[in-house]
Image 1: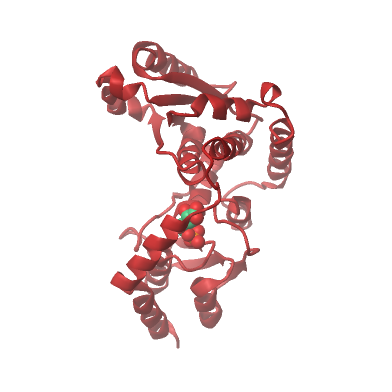
Image 2: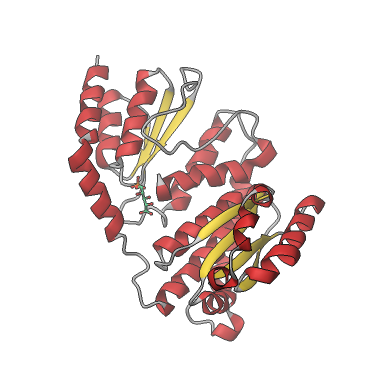
Length: 315
Ligand code: PA5
């Protein structure tokens, strides 16, 4: 869920056509009915205590799926240790959304070791160099005039961000949205082309009093497929220009899907941090998520139920 699930989405976008088997991120208490002993389930929860993940993990074991778990501790790690399930212990003390590389890189490495995708080391090293350069260019010390993340945060201040992605930038669009929500504490939304051209665009027919509050960020790539460029331009010129409060762009960096996707995520993360500062809120505070988790834990008692299911799996 949340900051732990996005590494699954981003892996899928990064791999694109390189992956030869069905691969997706499951965000619920259970797994799709067709997930059986031929499936590998990577149960990823940074805290190791998220009830939806624990419940889906128990389902995977009950169905005989191959399972590998990832967490920085919590019940997930305890269960895996007690059942002899392979577990990757993540460094603790971070926020789940900040620990993204610690969950994403192992997923790619595991897929490579299983022979499902080609080696990723070189791509990972180049991605990390791209990210370091982005941080340098957009550091706290870099003045706004030379700092595109600070400039974008200034542009977004007072608006609701709407991020448009496509193909390998689809999950990046989703992640930018959640970073604006979680870090900057503003409502935000995201949409994906071409699907948005078949439904979402009608919402922009509302009165400009309503739509002018939205600032659109179009995710762009120097190597856009023709049909995507055409759709971005048509959507901008025919629909957004008439209604959106602002139209902005963010350009992906690098050459591979991994570099493009993560460079966009990183630019968004840094922007969401500056927007939090502009909004005078703590970017790393997530009290409402914790409050809701506690309330649901008391009402649903899912963790007790999962513990009982795990006990039944023991020989
Ligand atoms: O960003 C966050 O803190 C949340 O989205 C969490 O990632 C989400 O609640 C799931 O928790 P965890 O990642 O510990 O499984």
